[in-house]
Image 1: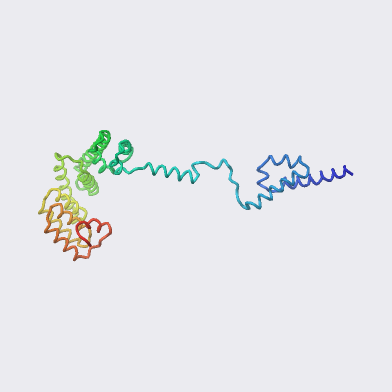
Image 2: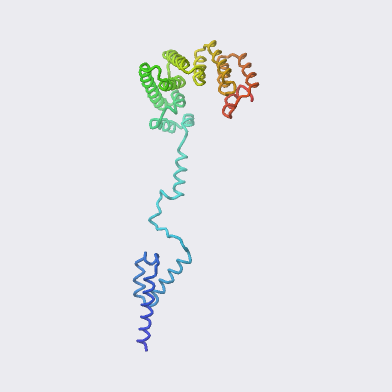
Length: 296
């Protein structure tokens, strides 16, 4: 009797193990260690495997298990947020760093300009050049000298190329733009500033002879005349701008700036009165620029 019971249990175990092993379960097939108890533990081995499979299906149907190996720090959102927050904390704008009392921070941030395009930090470097910290001043002076040297090399190259192609409008525009940025940078020394402005004035006149009444060129000419304190020509350019572009905000912004820099209070008041009776297409940026002179 006992033999028949054992034989029956073995048959049940074999059938159950067979169905468990052939069952299309990624969970069981991915775990080879389950095969041993399924085959060697009578009845309870297959029953245990079936229970595990059932619990798995009921708990997370249709989901994919995440293996520990797939979890890496660079893909972890909390870690990424923490690193980003730390980087932002250390990122101090150069403008603010110059004003800080922390000398180490000042030096560190100024040194960073050696690895980047230092021309975009030129205004701040000009301030840093007069800093009380000797090292900060030294680093800023090195960068400024480097920028100035690069400007001079580029200007010499354009001057030589333009001399061979004086009617090339594209080359002329590039030369004008480069020289204009150099003059506005504050880098030219007094000994060469006037000469460079004369070169700039000749280039602008040459372009106006090719493209008469070009708006951008007239704006540049107006600014150059103001820098030269050339009052008669300044008035001529202002009249041209107001005649051809009365609704352009840049016309009035540049006119007001010229009057203020030339300290002509009478013409400044005349400009404000004329501007208020003209339908100017103001932008928010334009309003902000003239807010210190007039309320619109």
